[in-house]
Length: 325
Image (cartoon, rainbow, N blue to C red; front, side, top):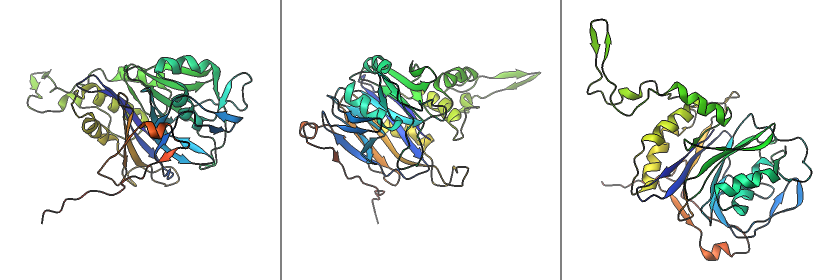
Protein backbone atom coordinates (compact mmCIF):
# COMPACT_ATOMS: atom_id res chain seq x y z
CA UNK A 1 0.00 0.00 0.00
CA UNK A 2 1.19 3.60 0.45
CA UNK A 3 2.91 5.83 2.99
CA UNK A 4 2.58 9.62 3.12
CA UNK A 5 4.03 12.35 5.33
CA UNK A 6 4.25 16.12 5.59
CA UNK A 7 7.50 17.98 6.22
CA UNK A 8 8.66 21.53 6.99
CA UNK A 9 12.05 22.72 5.73
CA UNK A 10 14.41 25.14 7.44
CA UNK A 11 12.72 28.10 5.74
CA UNK A 12 9.29 27.13 7.08
CA UNK A 13 7.95 25.83 3.75
CA UNK A 14 5.69 22.78 3.79
CA UNK A 15 5.83 19.65 1.67
CA UNK A 16 3.83 16.46 1.24
CA UNK A 17 5.57 13.26 0.13
CA UNK A 18 4.25 9.79 -0.61
CA UNK A 19 5.09 6.35 -1.92
CA UNK A 20 2.67 4.73 -4.34
CA UNK A 21 2.71 1.02 -3.56
CA UNK A 22 0.35 -1.28 -5.46
CA UNK A 23 0.10 -4.77 -6.91
CA UNK A 24 -1.37 -3.70 -10.27
CA UNK A 25 0.65 -1.58 -12.70
CA UNK A 26 -0.90 1.89 -12.61
CA UNK A 27 1.38 3.40 -15.28
CA UNK A 28 0.84 6.83 -13.74
CA UNK A 29 2.74 9.89 -14.98
CA UNK A 30 2.84 13.56 -14.05
CA UNK A 31 0.06 15.60 -15.63
CA UNK A 32 -0.81 19.30 -15.43
CA UNK A 33 -4.56 19.94 -15.26
CA UNK A 34 -5.58 23.45 -16.35
CA UNK A 35 -8.07 25.65 -14.56
CA UNK A 36 -11.73 24.84 -15.22
CA UNK A 37 -10.94 21.49 -16.87
CA UNK A 38 -14.12 19.41 -16.88
CA UNK A 39 -13.73 15.90 -15.52
CA UNK A 40 -16.15 13.11 -16.29
CA UNK A 41 -17.98 11.71 -13.26
CA UNK A 42 -19.43 8.22 -12.94
CA UNK A 43 -22.42 9.34 -10.87
CA UNK A 44 -23.04 12.72 -12.54
CA UNK A 45 -23.40 13.06 -16.32
CA UNK A 46 -22.44 16.75 -16.20
CA UNK A 47 -19.07 15.95 -14.59
CA UNK A 48 -17.33 18.68 -12.61
CA UNK A 49 -14.88 21.53 -13.11
CA UNK A 50 -13.12 23.78 -10.60
CA UNK A 51 -11.31 27.12 -10.64
CA UNK A 52 -7.91 25.75 -9.60
CA UNK A 53 -5.36 24.11 -11.83
CA UNK A 54 -3.07 21.44 -10.41
CA UNK A 55 -0.27 18.99 -11.11
CA UNK A 56 0.07 15.41 -9.93
CA UNK A 57 0.22 11.78 -10.99
CA UNK A 58 -2.57 10.59 -13.23
CA UNK A 59 -3.65 8.16 -15.90
CA UNK A 60 -6.37 7.95 -18.52
CA UNK A 61 -8.88 5.28 -17.40
CA UNK A 62 -12.28 6.11 -18.90
CA UNK A 63 -11.23 9.71 -18.39
CA UNK A 64 -8.42 11.26 -16.38
CA UNK A 65 -7.92 9.75 -12.92
CA UNK A 66 -5.67 11.56 -10.42
CA UNK A 67 -3.80 9.72 -7.68
CA UNK A 68 -2.30 12.77 -5.95
CA UNK A 69 -1.33 16.36 -6.66
CA UNK A 70 -0.85 19.96 -5.58
CA UNK A 71 -2.87 22.90 -6.89
CA UNK A 72 -2.07 26.52 -7.67
CA UNK A 73 -3.22 27.57 -4.17
CA UNK A 74 -0.80 25.17 -2.45
CA UNK A 75 -3.33 22.52 -1.40
CA UNK A 76 -2.03 18.97 -1.80
CA UNK A 77 -3.78 15.62 -1.55
CA UNK A 78 -2.99 11.94 -1.91
CA UNK A 79 -5.28 8.92 -2.28
CA UNK A 80 -4.40 5.76 -0.35
CA UNK A 81 -6.10 2.38 0.01
CA UNK A 82 -8.46 1.81 2.95
CA UNK A 83 -10.34 -1.49 3.04
CA UNK A 84 -12.78 -0.21 5.68
CA UNK A 85 -14.07 2.68 3.54
CA UNK A 86 -17.89 2.86 3.60
CA UNK A 87 -18.91 4.17 0.18
CA UNK A 88 -22.66 4.28 -0.35
CA UNK A 89 -24.27 1.80 -2.71
CA UNK A 90 -26.35 4.51 -4.43
CA UNK A 91 -25.93 8.26 -4.95
CA UNK A 92 -27.23 10.43 -2.10
CA UNK A 93 -29.78 13.02 -3.31
CA UNK A 94 -28.78 16.62 -2.78
CA UNK A 95 -25.04 15.90 -2.63
CA UNK A 96 -22.19 15.89 -5.10
CA UNK A 97 -21.68 12.15 -5.59
CA UNK A 98 -18.17 11.07 -6.51
CA UNK A 99 -16.44 7.78 -7.13
CA UNK A 100 -13.52 7.31 -4.75
CA UNK A 101 -11.05 7.71 -7.61
CA UNK A 102 -12.59 11.12 -8.49
CA UNK A 103 -12.09 12.73 -5.08
CA UNK A 104 -8.52 13.97 -5.64
CA UNK A 105 -9.43 15.82 -8.84
CA UNK A 106 -12.52 17.35 -7.23
CA UNK A 107 -10.77 18.60 -4.08
CA UNK A 108 -7.74 20.02 -5.91
CA UNK A 109 -9.95 21.74 -8.46
CA UNK A 110 -12.33 23.30 -5.94
CA UNK A 111 -10.46 23.94 -2.65
CA UNK A 112 -7.59 26.25 -1.72
CA UNK A 113 -6.85 25.00 1.81
CA UNK A 114 -7.39 22.15 4.24
CA UNK A 115 -10.05 24.27 5.93
CA UNK A 116 -11.94 24.58 2.65
CA UNK A 117 -11.69 20.82 2.15
CA UNK A 118 -13.16 20.24 5.61
CA UNK A 119 -16.00 22.68 4.95
CA UNK A 120 -16.82 21.11 1.58
CA UNK A 121 -17.35 17.58 2.88
CA UNK A 122 -20.92 18.19 4.06
CA UNK A 123 -21.96 18.50 0.42
CA UNK A 124 -20.01 15.49 -0.87
CA UNK A 125 -20.59 11.75 -0.89
CA UNK A 126 -18.49 8.84 -2.12
CA UNK A 127 -20.54 6.28 -4.01
CA UNK A 128 -19.50 2.73 -4.87
CA UNK A 129 -18.39 2.64 -8.50
CA UNK A 130 -16.39 -0.06 -10.28
CA UNK A 131 -12.95 1.10 -11.36
CA UNK A 132 -12.32 0.22 -15.01
CA UNK A 133 -8.68 -0.75 -14.45
CA UNK A 134 -9.21 -2.97 -11.41
CA UNK A 135 -12.68 -4.30 -12.16
CA UNK A 136 -14.08 -3.50 -8.71
CA UNK A 137 -14.77 -0.44 -6.52
CA UNK A 138 -11.64 1.05 -4.96
CA UNK A 139 -11.88 1.78 -1.21
CA UNK A 140 -9.76 4.84 -0.42
CA UNK A 141 -9.03 7.51 2.13
CA UNK A 142 -7.24 10.81 1.51
CA UNK A 143 -4.43 12.83 3.08
CA UNK A 144 -4.60 16.61 2.56
CA UNK A 145 -2.20 19.41 3.53
CA UNK A 146 -1.75 23.07 2.68
CA UNK A 147 0.86 25.84 2.76
CA UNK A 148 0.14 26.68 6.40
CA UNK A 149 1.02 23.14 7.52
CA UNK A 150 -2.62 22.26 8.22
CA UNK A 151 -3.10 18.55 7.61
CA UNK A 152 -6.07 16.22 7.70
CA UNK A 153 -7.35 12.78 6.76
CA UNK A 154 -10.68 12.16 5.05
CA UNK A 155 -12.48 8.85 5.44
CA UNK A 156 -15.92 7.67 4.38
CA UNK A 157 -17.58 6.21 7.50
CA UNK A 158 -21.15 5.11 8.18
CA UNK A 159 -21.86 8.77 8.99
CA UNK A 160 -20.54 9.97 5.62
CA UNK A 161 -17.31 11.73 4.76
CA UNK A 162 -15.41 12.51 7.95
CA UNK A 163 -12.47 14.89 8.32
CA UNK A 164 -9.87 14.16 11.01
CA UNK A 165 -7.24 16.73 11.92
CA UNK A 166 -3.88 14.99 11.57
CA UNK A 167 -1.56 15.91 14.46
CA UNK A 168 1.26 13.58 13.38
CA UNK A 169 1.37 14.43 9.66
CA UNK A 170 1.52 10.84 8.35
CA UNK A 171 -0.89 8.35 6.85
CA UNK A 172 -0.72 4.75 5.63
CA UNK A 173 -3.65 2.35 5.10
CA UNK A 174 -5.92 0.13 7.23
CA UNK A 175 -7.27 0.34 9.88
CA UNK A 176 -9.05 3.69 9.99
CA UNK A 177 -7.06 6.77 11.01
CA UNK A 178 -8.27 7.18 14.62
CA UNK A 179 -7.07 3.64 15.39
CA UNK A 180 -3.55 4.50 14.23
CA UNK A 181 -3.40 7.53 16.51
CA UNK A 182 -4.49 5.45 19.47
CA UNK A 183 -1.93 2.78 18.61
CA UNK A 184 0.90 5.31 18.88
CA UNK A 185 0.24 5.17 22.62
CA UNK A 186 2.00 1.79 22.60
CA UNK A 187 5.29 3.43 21.56
CA UNK A 188 6.05 6.38 23.90
CA UNK A 189 9.45 4.83 24.74
CA UNK A 190 10.85 5.29 21.22
CA UNK A 191 13.56 7.91 20.89
CA UNK A 192 16.34 8.80 18.45
CA UNK A 193 18.82 8.93 21.34
CA UNK A 194 20.92 6.22 23.00
CA UNK A 195 18.85 4.26 25.51
CA UNK A 196 19.75 4.92 29.17
CA UNK A 197 21.31 2.27 31.39
CA UNK A 198 19.00 -0.03 33.33
CA UNK A 199 19.50 -2.07 36.49
CA UNK A 200 18.69 -5.80 36.43
CA UNK A 201 19.50 -7.15 39.88
CA UNK A 202 23.16 -6.34 40.40
CA UNK A 203 23.78 -5.98 36.64
CA UNK A 204 23.87 -2.60 34.93
CA UNK A 205 22.82 -3.00 31.30
CA UNK A 206 24.22 -0.04 29.42
CA UNK A 207 23.40 1.18 25.94
CA UNK A 208 26.12 3.83 26.13
CA UNK A 209 27.72 4.32 22.75
CA UNK A 210 25.20 2.08 20.98
CA UNK A 211 23.48 4.53 18.65
CA UNK A 212 19.97 3.46 17.76
CA UNK A 213 19.21 1.63 21.01
CA UNK A 214 16.50 4.18 21.81
CA UNK A 215 14.54 2.94 18.78
CA UNK A 216 14.65 -0.76 19.66
CA UNK A 217 11.13 -2.00 19.15
CA UNK A 218 10.38 0.33 16.23
CA UNK A 219 8.27 -1.76 13.82
CA UNK A 220 10.11 -2.61 10.62
CA UNK A 221 7.70 -4.74 8.58
CA UNK A 222 5.56 -3.65 5.62
CA UNK A 223 2.12 -3.74 7.24
CA UNK A 224 0.26 -0.45 7.29
CA UNK A 225 0.14 -0.50 11.11
CA UNK A 226 3.91 -0.80 11.37
CA UNK A 227 4.55 1.70 8.59
CA UNK A 228 2.38 4.27 10.36
CA UNK A 229 4.42 4.02 13.57
CA UNK A 230 7.68 4.07 11.63
CA UNK A 231 6.57 7.06 9.55
CA UNK A 232 5.52 9.00 12.66
CA UNK A 233 8.92 8.27 14.21
CA UNK A 234 10.90 9.25 11.10
CA UNK A 235 8.91 12.44 10.56
CA UNK A 236 9.22 13.44 14.23
CA UNK A 237 13.01 13.24 14.14
CA UNK A 238 13.65 14.45 10.58
CA UNK A 239 15.60 17.70 10.90
CA UNK A 240 14.49 20.75 8.90
CA UNK A 241 16.79 20.90 5.87
CA UNK A 242 17.62 23.41 3.17
CA UNK A 243 17.06 20.81 0.45
CA UNK A 244 13.75 19.29 1.47
CA UNK A 245 13.53 16.95 -1.51
CA UNK A 246 16.80 15.26 -0.55
CA UNK A 247 15.64 14.97 3.07
CA UNK A 248 12.29 13.50 2.03
CA UNK A 249 13.97 11.07 -0.34
CA UNK A 250 15.89 9.59 2.57
CA UNK A 251 12.82 9.73 4.82
CA UNK A 252 10.76 7.66 2.37
CA UNK A 253 13.53 5.14 1.68
CA UNK A 254 12.57 2.88 4.66
CA UNK A 255 9.11 2.49 3.10
CA UNK A 256 10.17 1.44 -0.40
CA UNK A 257 8.93 -1.98 -1.44
CA UNK A 258 11.18 -3.77 -3.92
CA UNK A 259 9.72 -6.38 -6.28
CA UNK A 260 8.80 -9.68 -4.56
CA UNK A 261 9.72 -8.47 -1.05
CA UNK A 262 6.00 -8.22 -0.26
CA UNK A 263 3.53 -10.59 -1.91
CA UNK A 264 -0.25 -10.43 -1.96
CA UNK A 265 -2.41 -13.45 -1.08
CA UNK A 266 -2.52 -14.46 -4.75
CA UNK A 267 1.27 -14.24 -5.07
CA UNK A 268 1.45 -10.93 -6.91
CA UNK A 269 4.17 -8.55 -5.70
CA UNK A 270 3.20 -5.17 -4.28
CA UNK A 271 5.84 -2.70 -5.45
CA UNK A 272 6.61 0.97 -4.87
CA UNK A 273 5.71 2.19 -8.36
CA UNK A 274 6.78 5.75 -7.72
CA UNK A 275 7.58 8.33 -5.07
CA UNK A 276 6.15 11.85 -5.21
CA UNK A 277 7.36 15.00 -3.46
CA UNK A 278 4.99 17.97 -3.47
CA UNK A 279 6.31 21.48 -2.74
CA UNK A 280 3.23 23.32 -1.46
CA UNK A 281 4.78 26.81 -1.40
CA UNK A 282 5.88 26.59 -5.03
CA UNK A 283 3.05 24.34 -6.28
CA UNK A 284 5.70 22.08 -7.77
CA UNK A 285 5.57 18.30 -8.23
CA UNK A 286 8.56 15.92 -8.17
CA UNK A 287 8.08 12.40 -9.55
CA UNK A 288 10.48 9.47 -9.15
CA UNK A 289 9.64 6.24 -10.96
CA UNK A 290 10.57 2.84 -9.51
CA UNK A 291 13.69 2.36 -11.64
CA UNK A 292 14.78 6.00 -11.72
CA UNK A 293 17.46 7.61 -9.60
CA UNK A 294 16.71 11.01 -11.13
CA UNK A 295 13.58 13.02 -10.34
CA UNK A 296 11.24 14.69 -12.82
CA UNK A 297 10.20 18.19 -11.67
CA UNK A 298 6.97 19.74 -12.97
CA UNK A 299 5.96 23.31 -12.23
CA UNK A 300 2.55 24.90 -12.65
CA UNK A 301 3.33 27.36 -15.44
CA UNK A 302 0.75 29.94 -16.48
CA UNK A 303 0.67 28.58 -20.02
CA UNK A 304 -0.13 25.07 -18.78
CA UNK A 305 -2.78 26.38 -16.35
CA UNK A 306 -4.46 28.25 -19.23
CA UNK A 307 -4.22 25.36 -21.70
CA UNK A 308 -7.25 23.78 -23.28
CA UNK A 309 -6.48 20.26 -22.06
CA UNK A 310 -4.33 18.40 -19.50
CA UNK A 311 -0.64 18.09 -20.33
CA UNK A 312 1.12 14.80 -19.65
CA UNK A 313 4.86 14.92 -18.93
CA UNK A 314 7.36 12.26 -20.01
CA UNK A 315 9.44 10.93 -17.10
CA UNK A 316 12.87 9.39 -16.69
CA UNK A 317 12.45 5.73 -15.75
CA UNK A 318 16.09 4.64 -15.75
CA UNK A 319 18.90 4.76 -13.19
CA UNK A 320 21.64 7.34 -13.76
CA UNK A 321 25.10 5.78 -13.63
CA UNK A 322 28.31 7.81 -13.84
CA UNK A 323 31.08 5.71 -15.39
CA UNK A 324 34.46 6.78 -14.03
CA UNK A 325 36.63 4.15 -15.71
